[in-house]
Amino acid sequence: MLRFKILASVVPLLIAGLFARSELMPGTPPCIVLGDHSVQIASSPWQAQRHVGFTDDPSLATVRVQIVDDAASADFAVTDDPDAADSKACRVTSATQLVAITSRSAAADPVIYLTRDNDADYRIFVSSKSFSARDAAALVVGAGDGHPRITTASIGGRS
Image (cartoon, rainbow, N blue to C red; front, side, top):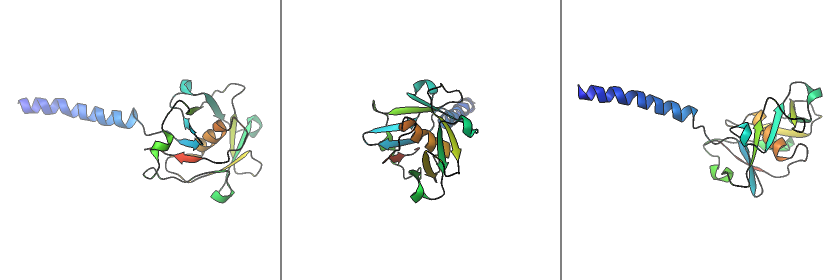
C-alpha cells in the first residue's frame, strides 16, 4: 500500500516536470553574432532594447525585407541545424542586444514588411528548423537600427 501511495504521488510530479521543461524552459532564442556582441530575440518585450513590428500593409512599413530563394543573393542567410548550432556563440552578456517582436510599436520602432518583391532594404534567405523568416528579419532589422546593412554575422540557434 505504501508503494502505491509513493507511486501515486510521484507520477503527477513527473508529468509536471515534463510540462515545465517543454513550456517554461524553451531552448535558446534565435540569435546572431555581430563582431564582439550578439543580437537575440527577447523572451519578453520589456527586456528588449529594440522593438520591431510586422505589417501586412506595405504602405505602413518602414523597412522592407525580401525573402529570397537563394543564399547567394541574400544580404543575410540562415541555414542552421539545431543540433549543430554553436550555442556558446550567442551566450547572453552585457553586450547582448535584445530585440522584441511586438504587435504595438512606438513611432520610432521599425515596422517590417516581408515580401518576395525586389524593392527591399534587406534580402534574407532562411532554411532553418529553429529560425523563421520573421525571426531572421527581426534580428537583421533590430541589429541594423532600422536601415544600415549588416556586412558580416554568424548565427546561433536553439539548443
